Image (cartoon, rainbow, N blue to C red):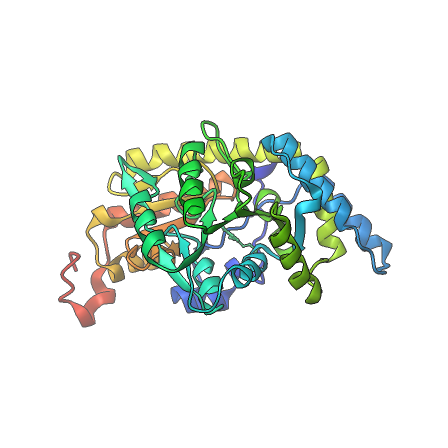
Length: 407
Ligand SMILES: Cc1ncc(COP(=O)(O)O)c(C=O)c1O
């Protein structure tokens, strides 16, 4: 029995199980919530202890220890990824998206383009558009069942459109790619040729499976024309609601500008809970993380076998990194409404709709599998049962001419 087998209560005030959210997104509340990318697991013991120490101390005087936090992040990256990061090049922000939002404003003007590799983490659209910038989609392509970047499309768009930054997601959410050195180098060469900055969101960098190797932008781009959003311990250690974000900016001029902006908004120091939990995680959480990765790898292996043997019409993109699986249901030949009815009302699953990540991906869904294996197995069995029974068409009576399914 692994510590990750323990089924913990998913509280209703957690966003992913919040009945108001479920109702507004899925139309029902009696669904297994596997959508938001967080974990059902208890955090590592050293992080629990660090937080308990703070809570029992009961004094919250000003306490600034960002220098120690940056050192902890540097030490972790050196040990884990053989990545040398200077603590002096770090900037703290209150979250990864906050950091990206600030960088976009620093690096571009209203109306400029920011390129993303779609389908991609849906908040990227909001963070770009809410700043008055334009999303330029560089669609990923599937070659031999494997997602790849489309460098020809990228080059054409970098040449012809007014693009100021590429917002890279590495490892990629939701398709699970961990970009290889070769792919990263091509991207860097193109960006440098066109004077475009790369903002690399590396929040999922520690969740990488055997056979793949994470390469931070910071290890490859000598031109310093990049900002690595080294991320935060959020995804790695399941600290979504108590973590900060960290930017690593090797270019001194850019670092000065960003520091000034963040400093002038007083966003450069976070809560002591977050700081101490971060230091505990990076200094003492490695064993827990190795156990987690082994557990998730076992889960992925089980999912791969189940989909292959029991769900032949569902295509699984087994991730190289992240704890999301990306599922393609298009071979079922269902209308979008029928697919939604089947997964939500019949299989009783709340999965993230694929079109959140790119409009045309209506036949795809992302499943978050950072839960006890028994729960994930249950989810897949529910899906199989629904597929075996096929779509209950009664939901569709008003539109019985729906031509894309058997209804
Ligand atoms: C790629 C990526 N970036 C950023 C975030 C959110 O980070 P934060 O909560 O620190 O803003 C997520 C959360 O799922 C993510 O997947």
